[in-house]
Amino acid sequence: MLVHQPLLIPPVAASAALVHGAPGLPISQPRNLIGGHLLAGAIGYATLAVTGSTAWGAAIAAGLALGAMMLCRVSHSPAAASAVVVVLQAPHAWPFLPLLALSTVLLVAIGLLPGRIGGHPVRYPLSW
Image 1 (cartoon, rainbow, N blue to C red):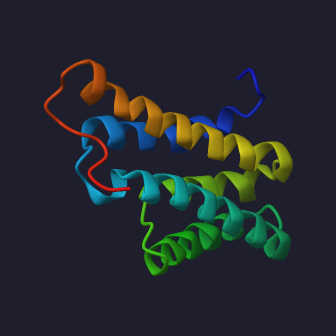
Image 2 (cartoon, rainbow, N blue to C red):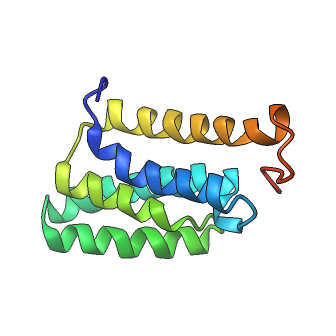
């Protein structure tokens, strides 16, 4: 809310649920989380440029983002919502993409804490 991008909350919240609730899943690993969101954001902007801010454009962006994530081996299903947010809300790329990157990096950093300082038996990440 402070950075005026409240629509980043749903995709990043879904990612947080995976990092903290299922830290052993491949889609929860840092490479997938960060790479998936950034790839989906870029695809969202490319789709927005072609289709405009439409519901069809959002659906196309989500599908393309999921396909691209699978091809690039950075599958992270909540990231498809980042592509949808970009198409439907058309935020300026300059503040949005760096903020998306920062939020995913912070999420990974916070995911590291329980196993490092709390003695939690589950280690995160399992792979980078």
